[in-house]
Structure formats: structure tokens, C-alpha cells
Amino acid sequence: MKLIKFPGLLLLAFLFTFSGFSQDSEEYQVAENYTKQEVDIAMRDGTKLHTTIYSPKDTSKKYPIIMQRTPYSSRPYGEGQLRSKIGPNEYLMKEGNIIVYQDVRGRWMSEGVYDNMRAYIPNKKGKQFDEASDTYDSIDWLIKNIKNNNGKVGTWGISYPGFYAVYSLLDAHPALKAVSPQAGISDFFFDDFHHNGAYLLSYWRATSIFGYEKSTPSDTAWYKMPELNSEDQYQFFLDNGPLSNLDKYYKEDNVFWQQLKDHPNYDEFWKSRGILQHLKNVKPAVMTVGGLFDAEDLYGPFHEYQSIEKSGDNYNTLVYGPWSHGDWARKSPRQAIGNVYFGDNISEDYQKNIETKFFNHFLKGSGSKDSGLPEAYMYDTGNREWDEYAAWPPKEAKTKKYFLGADQKLEDKATDAEVTFVSDPKKPVPYSEDIKMVFTPRKYMTDDQRFAARRPDVLVFETEVLQEDLTLVGPIEAALKVATTGTAADWVVKVIDVYPADAPDYEETQEYLKMGNYHMMVRSDVIRGRFRNSFEKPEPFEANKKTDVSFELQDVNHTFKKGHKLQIQVQSTWFPLIDLNPQTYVPNIFKAKAEDFKKQTHTVYGDSFIKVSVLNEK
Image (cartoon, rainbow, N blue to C red; front, side, top):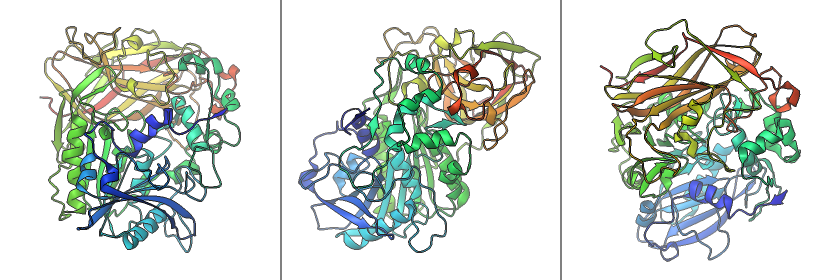
């Protein structure tokens, strides 16, 4: 094991993605326009949280405070050391706001013990604390001690800082007026480290960042990352075998690895750390932001928005663009995910005309519900244009079912088809053709799926060539009727846009590919079959018995253009995005042994269907 300093690999993963925006904007000197102050703010239990404050040098007027609480460091530390860019975007930075960064409890220069997705405590008494009280106490101090503030506070953050932004809504300080959770985690059983109970092996290396605790403030990284000595993640994980063999990389001192192993089911440990159930009677204005191709936190933003929408009558809006994790905070002239191009200057348009407008309206303007922004601002990833909706999902959408028929066809009605395939844990279906070792996967969300369609252990069902545009909006439900010769199985469903044969290549298209007949993945997800009836109480399959397996794929806003085809793929392995299922039932897959992994035959029946919401079908 070796100590990895924060700059380098993690600089790209966290500093740009989570802490702000890209560094390619026109020259603007923070040091010439802002003063920096570092303070340690005492919480109600006496623990001090390290906080960095950037205040405009122009003191002729009052400014709102915009704060980010982060586990990824409020650096740079030390007098005279300033960030080159601050705030959610360059427009808010240049026009003048008080920008605050804070190391959360137990991370970097803050005191205390870190708790991964610390559980919320309702009705706290005395010195009881959680992230809500830490946020409240911090805002209270900032309002009372920072000169030239106008008494209004906003919070924002991407990914884990997005989780802390969501948390600021609980027991919110009266001064908190505007909150923008962006790609916020909401529940680790459905975001990041699990999808519907399936463990995301592809995030295994990130365990090092969250798993090692520290007892004193530190301005350098204290966590360790394993040396893998491989550039082929598929082969690396296949050679290592069962999850239990990975214990040699993470010992008992990695608290999060132990938690993952000890809590394979959706028990109280995970439930208590979820935040959705607490989003009630929200008062501040909220703008939830996400990427339609965010491989890490797609579940959270959609469900946070819906939970807040049900909870009260505060201002609540949703923005989803053609982005991967954190792309909206960058300023790429061409927005692309992997091989697929979506348009020009999309992130800059968002920063200038949506994000800045939101914060200015609620922190500097009237703060009325008439913000000038729609209820839902969603990018159509097929038409390549923004859509504005009065509700999400759109109320005018109509439900349609596509049944998984024989001869690779999607049918309008159920059939008596039975399609089988052999799932072999020794030769799992890759999630990507790329041969590399990635820290967290992203590009695969729009990857070409032809390589999978041509495998015998991937079932393909598709429409004829579309004669009219077909727009799918909102969540997609997979309702499978299946059987297996074993007692355990995972089920993966992918929704794919098949391009016409004459589709032109993009600048971003990999050299070995062509966009003609490109199988673009639009949406995909997995369920660990043992959780088909309950995430709390797993159960085996009865061998060779037809069984219902239903789960939700996250929302889309995608037009399948005339001349394209809608395709559905069904498979059982997706490696090493998710770990391998032994396909024989064991109580805890983290403790499965090599002999538990067996080749099995799976069957998908013709009354299986995919339920979608269609916006423009005649």
C-alpha cells in the first residue's frame, strides 16, 4: 500500500468535479478581487470545523454568502494561498459573492470523527449533532461574523458536496434561502456503491477515500490507495475472483470496506443514512441538478426532487443536461459523452442562464416563486435541444409497453416466447470494450453496445425502423418474467438507440468505431435478483420456476429519431461494473467462495415487458 497525495489522480476526480468549475475561462485573478480568511468554527458540541472564506475586496455593498461543505478539502490552506476559481461558476465569482468552503466533520483540517453519510437525527437535544446541525451552526456563525453579508445564504455542491447541500435543507437556518444539490448522493444502496442492491465493483477503489479515518486535522491525504499493477480492470478483477479475495487490499482499518461487507442487505445501517425520507416541509428554494449520463449519482437527484415536490410548497425546480458526473461545472465548447456529441457550450449556457439566475433571484433579488425558470429544464438527448416542462415527468405523457418477443422483436402484446442464454461467471459480459483501469467509470453510459449484442449471453429485442420520432420521458420500468437453473442471478436491462447505417461520425468517435449502426446506450440498470421482493429480506430463486423480477431504470428525456430503432438488451453479468453473482444463493456475496460460482441457464419469457412513458405517440 502506498500513500497517494491529493494532487494528481484525485485532483482531476475531485478538485474540478466537486469543488467548482473548469479552469479554462478568461483570466480572472481571485487574489486581486477577494480576501481569504481561514477560521475554525465551533459546533454545538465543541468540535471545530475548518472554514475558508473568500470576501470581495469591494466593501461598498453587501453580498450573500454561498457555501459548500465538502469532504474533499477546502484547500489550499495557509495565508496567501488562494484558489484560482471560486464559487459555483465564474459569473457568480466575478459579480461578487462571499464564497465559503468548509471541511466537514472528521475530514482534512476539521476536528471530529468522519461518518460516511452520517445519519440524520430528528429532534436533536443538547449537544447532539449531525450534518444538519453542523450546517446550521456554521451559517449562524457566518451571518453574525462576516462583514458586509446581506443576511442571505445559499449552499451548493456536486456529488458528495451535493449530499451536504441536500442535508442543509433539514432543520434549515432561517438565513438559508437557496440550495442547489448537484448530483447529490441520497442513498448508498442505490447510488454510487450499489444499484438496486448489486455492488458496483467499479467503485471499489474509491473505498480508500471514504474508509480510512483520522483523529486529528490534516492538510495532506491520510488515506491509502492500493497498487494494482494492472491496466486491464476486467482481467484484474476476474483474476482476483470472489470479493473475499479483495480483503488483501483493504484491511480492518478501512471502516467503509468492513461496513460494505457487514451490511449486504438494505438494513437499518443503510436506511438510517438515506436522506430522502427526511425531505419534508422544506423551506428554502431548491434547484436540483443532474446529468442524464451520470454514472455515479443518477438516482439521487431525481428522487430528491420528487421527495421535495411531495413534501411541501417551496420553490423546487429540476435541471438535467447531457452530462456525465459534474460536466455542468466545466466549460467544454463541445459537450460529448464518450463517442456521442450533444451540442456546443451547453455547460456555459447552464452556468450563465440557469445557475446564476437561480442564485441571484433568491439571494439578491425578490426571492418570489416567479424566478423565470421552468419547473423542469430537461435536455432531449436525441433531439439535442432543451425542453421546458411544467411538471416532471410530464403529465401529458402516455404509458406504453414493449413486450420481449421471439426473433429479437419488441412486440405490442405478450407472447409465449421463451428465450434462453447461458450465464458463465468465468466469461462475464464486459460493461465496456475499452481496455483500461478507471477510477470511476463514466464513458460507458453512452457506449456502443454492438459488442454486447453479438454475444450469445445477451438477449436483443428491437423495433422495426421507426417511421416517426418517438420521445420517451420519465422513468422506465422493467417487468421481467424469468427463470434460472440456479438459485441466484442478476438482471441487467439496457435501453438502446440504434442509429441508421448512414449516420455520420463525430469528432469524438473512437477511431475503431463508426456511428453508422451505432448502438447508443440511453439508459441501463441492474437488480440483484435476491432483492426482487424486498431489499431488506433477500431470498433465493426456486430453480426452473418462472418468477417476476421488476425494477425501475432512471428517467430519460430522449427522442428516438425517425430512421432509428429502439432496442432492449437483457443480460445477467455486467463486469466489472458490478461484481459477479455466484448464481447459487449464498447469504452474503462478499463472503462467497470460488466454489459457489456456477454456470447457469437463464430464461426470459414473452410476457416480460418494458414500460415507458411516451410523449409524442399518435
